Length: 411
Ligand SMILES: Cc1ncc(COP(=O)(O)O)c(C=O)c1O
Image 1: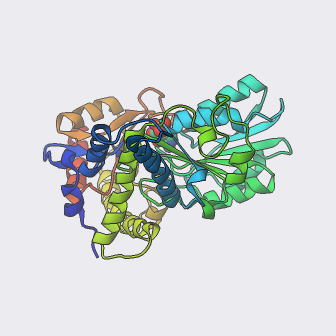
Image 2: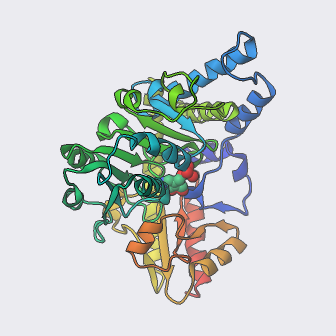
Image 3: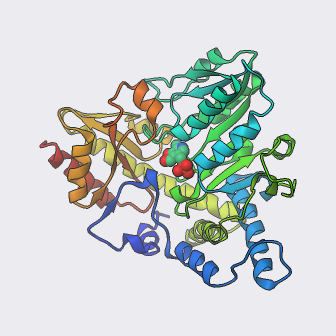
């Protein structure tokens, strides 16, 4: 079945603006009406704190458990006990970095790749500074646009305690082979922390298959509310020492979720999972919640691959334009539909401003892909123009983007 993009678009009120093309998706997607409605319904309905004997509180307890269980299904995790939900990937990573590194010794090493978003760099640099840890860097390969296992292996030593990996780049769009990289890191006895923020909107994460210890993503990048999700292996999550108040439960996930959860956003998160499952049903699939999500993701990915090929084919025809990432149409499966570019003689901000005047929303700058920007030797502030597609974009929009970029640079 072809991807039902018209049906999908009808579910998103924000797409009811023919004058707008949302190509800013790597920074955050639009949401289906049902997600926004679920947030409002929770705030106007059963709205209380957790753990009381009264109905509104009990309803919030149920929601809290459901959100974690359903997030576990989405991530392929064993149970909701392995999932921590918080304000954002960055906030969760700062939070968990303190617990993960609590027993590390001065001189122990953390390996970070140059493909990372700053959310998987800053927290480790800070804790390394505080605890006297050593940071080692792994560059991505400028030909494959990925971090190669051999390059990672060269940075591992007997002191390596943690390896931080990027699943899909928010600049180049390339996807790392996390299973292969994790295997190398595990051989060296290191923990593996994976940033799946840009992978999860396009491919369904499966934490069991990746061989990592922790994985983070953000719901607002995949049609949900502003929440981050962190998965950690249960035995590990139980053995770490959380920073928490004395009377906070020592159970999972509570021990890592001090404070009152954003209950209305948990309702929005559940509606996001409904969206994926309902789309699976719409595509004529049956089965478990995960089966339905998988069906949605498979159809969406194939559709996005077509858009990506069209976009890259169109852009490569523009004189002086360089794409920073995989352009080979036979390697589309090694990337997500995030395409970063520069055009000789034109600043990324000028191109983005011209596109904005035509209702085409794209980002420019380093977009917190600070390390990739530096590895590529690009000007840090100007960075690139980043065109980021989603499964609600259309072929017609892609054609309009290409035409507008060409016009913006006078090609
Ligand atoms: C690859 C990647 N990692 C991490 C983040 C940070 O996510 P959050 O805004 O949830 O902290 C982003 C945000 O753009 C991202 O693209």
